[in-house]
Length: 463
Image (tube, one colour):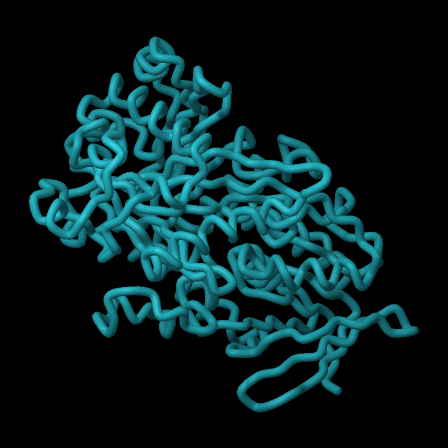
C-alpha cells in the first residue's frame, strides 16, 4: 500500500488551489489527488462536439466532473465577497476570508488571467434605480475570466503542480477508513482496477457532484450534517442589448427581489452577457446552466441568467435536494432533458410548440424541447419567477417580452453542511472538508480560498 502524507479526494477548485499552495510553499508533504473525471484538456461535452443535440448522460459528466470541477468549465466568475457564495467567513473570520479570496484573484492573474476585468457592483446610480422597484443589488467585486480563459488557467495550474503532486484521473474513491494509528486508508476503483492508499490526512473536496458520497462518509464517521437549501428556477435568455446598460457596468448583477404575492425571495444568478445556455448532468438529472467567453469572437447575440427561488424544508420532510431532483426529473420526463418556453406563451397559459418557436425572434443557444414549464415547476415558484421578470422589466425594458426564453429547470443543489471547526477539520482528527462539497462554500472564490486555507495549515506540519 503506497504511503502519502495528504490525500485530496476531488480536484474541484478547492482541491486545485490546495495542491497549488502546497506546491508553492514547497511543502515536503507527499500529496495525492484522486479525481473521478478527466484531465482538463479531455473534458469535452458531446453536445459541444456536435455528436448529439441533447444530453446523453455521460458517466461521469465532463461538465460536472474532472480537473477543475464544475467550476473548471464554467464561465469563470469569481465573486470577491462574503455577502453571498457561502459561509467561510463565519468559520475563519471575514478579514481572513477576504484576504484569501484576493490572494486567489492574484493567482488567477498570474496564471493567465491578466487582462481580464474586475467589475464592481458598488454603483450607486444603478443601486438607486433598482431600489425604486424593490430590487436589491448586492455588493461584490467580480472577476470574470470567461470559459476559455478559465480552462487555460486550470491547465497552467495543472502544469505547475504535476511534477510535485501525484494525480489519479478516472478514479473513484470507494471508501475511507480510519486506522488504529490515526491515519486513513483510501480505497479506489479506477481504470487500472482497485487500489488502496494510506495517508495521515484526508481532505474531502468532492464539489457539488459529490453530495451523495459525502453524506455516506459523514454518516460512517458520525459527523453531523445540516441539511441545506435547494434553489429552483429557470434560465432566462434574451437579446444582449436588453441588459447591456447593466452588464456593461457590473457584469454580474446579483439582484434580490421579495415578491408581493408570497413574500418569497427571488434572485438573479450567474449572468452571462453574450453567453450561451448549456445543460449539465448531476447524478443522472439533466439541468440547465450558462457559460460566457472572454474572447469576443465566441460571443453570441444573447445574454442569459438564472432566476432562482430558495427552498428549505424541516419536518416531516427535510431533504431539499431530493425535492429539487424530483422537479428536474419531471422536466427530463416531459422534454427528454431540458424544456424551453417563450415567456409570452407561459403567461398566456399555452405550450410553446415547434411552430411557435419558428416565429420566435430570440434564437436559442441550446437545443431544447419546446414545452410547458407550468407542468413542471410548482405554481408558487413559477408565480415568483413571473413577478420577478416583470420587476426586472422596469430596470431593463424588454425583459418581459413575449420572445424572452425560459429554460427549465435550473436547480442549484447545495451539499448538506458538514460540521467542521475553524480549521475546516471534522471531529475526526486529520479529516478535513473543503469547497462546495463541504456545504460551507457555494462559490468559486470561497471554495478556492478554503483550499488555500487548509493548505497553509498542513504546510506547517511538513516543512
